[in-house]
Image (cartoon, rainbow, N blue to C red; front, side, top):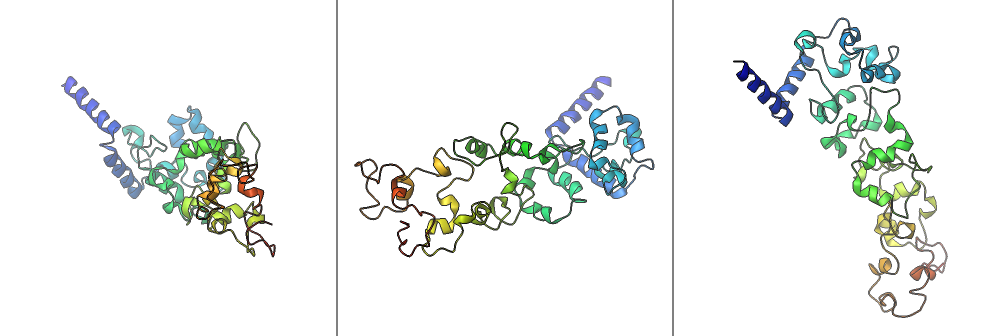
Length: 305
């Protein structure tokens, strides 16, 4: 009988580890919320067992552990996030756990946070790619005096853990001046993107890519008398905003970049390197067409001045 019991316990543990019993545990936790059997002693009941855990006690160093504010500790305390205690004490009934190894889905983990954090900054969370398989705890830490991701110097490192392609671009020779633990810059990911979602592509804070760029590059904003159509349409037609091996974060060097659009007449379609003219020297096309973002000069139709 003992062997059978051990085998059965091992199978159950394996099923939980494989995720097959994840749904039933999640259902149990939802039922506990519906029953609402909260402990009368609140956090004091929890700390009878958990007070020796440094991570648990670090909660009281931050805003979530403040007993005199609108934080969870001033309301239902530990159970505000981890769910009603129910029969956890004694029968070891599960409580909600958070993070990558949490026992409920990322959606339900985030729903616990969003029950308090309801404001304009999070109104588009449902529309962000982060909500598909990430929870708030994938980036944020609660049991700490200072959430690391709220430190601008740590932000880029946090984002680049998942956004690997952008991380490669950020380390190319031409990129934005980013703030990291090893360098002092003026920008971080959140200056352009909203991690909590927005109504635009790429979770941009502004309504379009160009409006995002204009927050810093206001001199490129029109209206201009003579406009360069790719510039008006989308800055990323020519630039990679995360970084490039070319100057000014250009997708390609001139004249190849220019020839991706201007290749229909003899002047613009001349092969690169076919002579020693200004077309292939120095700044290439920009040797003459210096006002490439647009011009207000009466004679600037060709963006020459």
